[in-house]
Image (cartoon, rainbow, N blue to C red; front, side, top):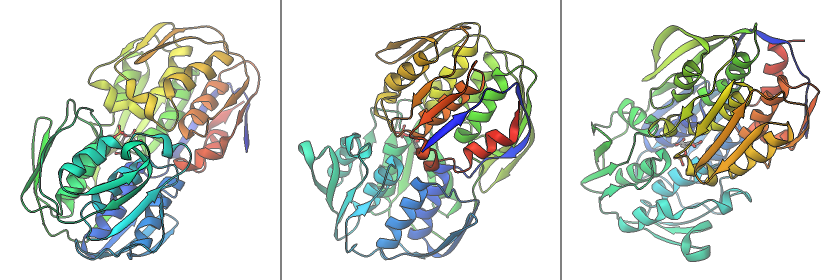
Length: 429
Ligand code: S3P
């Protein structure tokens, strides 16, 4: 599927964005492991989260929906999952895979997990290593590093794990496995990654100890069925917010967006770049802070994005690179080597595609350097099957001098069904 993006003068109006992908996955997983019913509202009907729903269905969990974002999960408790009769397919979703590997590690049965071409090339040793140390066994390609992976779970022992990477998927995989291990499981990470697993475990009745970058839980707790209202996904809101920030005269509000401090690096960077950004109506919703975000287009200036900020905006870097191309001056993005192992190698794909628009962008081993302010021209851009590359290039096209075609744009449905419609609704031509 192709997406044609026409240049616009500015963006104006109010929208909401679909539910948060990370929170939606976790609601299904914890709902399945709880006792009792869990009701989820504003569940992301994107392909990644639907893959999670399917996997848990195959593990014997009764799930009704999703229907207009409503999902009802009949929890089976920590001991109620069933051996799946077929291979589990996580599609394009790294979160489904890595978190599910943590849960499957604790099951007294055999399961096999696979995914699409992109997912089968993403590193899994980062989770199978600590999970093996806890007692699970894995069999897969290239020394058990890639999907498809066969998992033989069983009795786990708790561990104290020092993660080499600030990754919520690694942290969550070990914590979820820790639910099945008798005793205390601890994860320490080099910098804080998103903490949705911790917040949601607490809201399902699990006690955690959180100090600095370390989180500890006692194994074999009881999870209680819960009501979860999923906040709007800041990683999806990022696309219209950046588009409004780079198009002078724009004035948009995205309502009901999650602003968890482990996810709000985008807002900090846009402010540093000079954006006119306001948070309105800040409130708590199912243990997560939420706000309406208003951005007025004033033009941006270059900045540096590095260090502990990176995990707080890791998924927003493609669209921040677009912001940098439209900003005056230089933007340096570093300490972001993790981008190479996302749905595509995002250092390479962002640089390659933005160059086609005429942007001045250089790859670093762990980031990008963008000399902003060059006028961009519409082009034919590729998605590489990566939803965030497709959407970032669509934002680049909004401010360019001719129409842009995004090839392979079907992948936006992974995280932001209705993306093209949202842009059209806000566009002032
Ligand atoms: C996610 C964690 C991040 C992020 C991904 C979703 C999660 O990955 O890039 O889109 O839901 O835990 P890493 O943990 O690999 O950084």
